Length: 216
Image 1 (cartoon, rainbow, N blue to C red):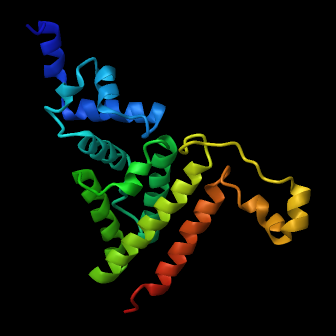
Image 2 (cartoon, rainbow, N blue to C red):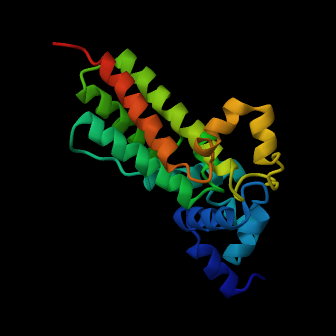
Image 3 (cartoon, helix red, strand yellow):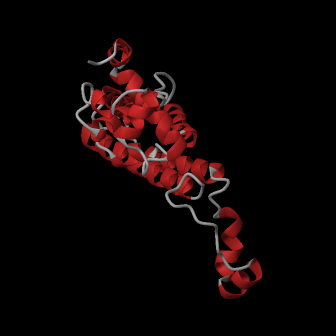
């Protein structure tokens, strides 16, 4: 007969608590090692108890992605350029706070209400600039794909990347001899200080988008 303590623990479970526990596990150990069994252990319950709230690991990961999306700031005021800057900077902040979980935002379909709100906010930014629905869709994809690609590259250069290995690049004198153009740009290619490159990308995108704004 199940203990009253175990029954009480199961009753205290809810999707919000489970998703937060899953995010904490992924932040500590990474996506590769995440499992329903480990999540159950972290919550002090049998893994089967989790299936009363989620159909499987995939739904839990969707919920974790929803938590990450809820951390992204959705600026309601300001010019479209100011709102776009604030949005993408906030998106990067989520990636740097949760580097091991961020891959979920780049790889999973948007199934949570928080994700739809995020997309709606992006569409509103470009609508305020005067774009039509077709162009808005293309610009949202452009910005989203650039952000995800840039931030996955930034994360891959840290110990939060999957199977990190120490760099084995040749020494700078050897690089300068064999790859002179690379050597000249090498200080600006590092992912260790990615902020300036990310800002350059934002401003380049804004200039491109600004050149497309419909003239009245």
